[in-house]
Image (tube, rainbow, N blue to C red; front, side, top):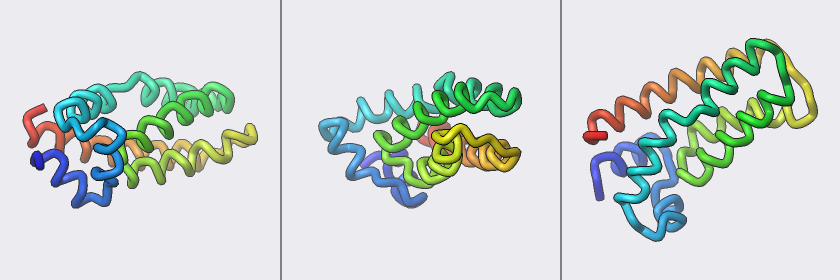
Length: 119
């Protein structure tokens, strides 16, 4: 098992479940992980939250919810769910931007994991 997968597992990620979805191909998972870290939905969510556009924020957050679930990135998925669910009902609050900022701090941790793993 690669250093990337080992570090993700240590962070509480469901690496085994994710690998099953990726047909147990670590190289394919690693390629998708690298792309995930730069997904445009992060910037889109940031902009939508700052503009208090609940519809656009929901679309971007829902995209990230699916990506984090498929990648098995459970700690990030849990944060995204806290953003998606209020937005699903069209409810915007300033707390969502705070959760987003926490999520982005977590993303930096995942980027460092990727860097240490040679991505």
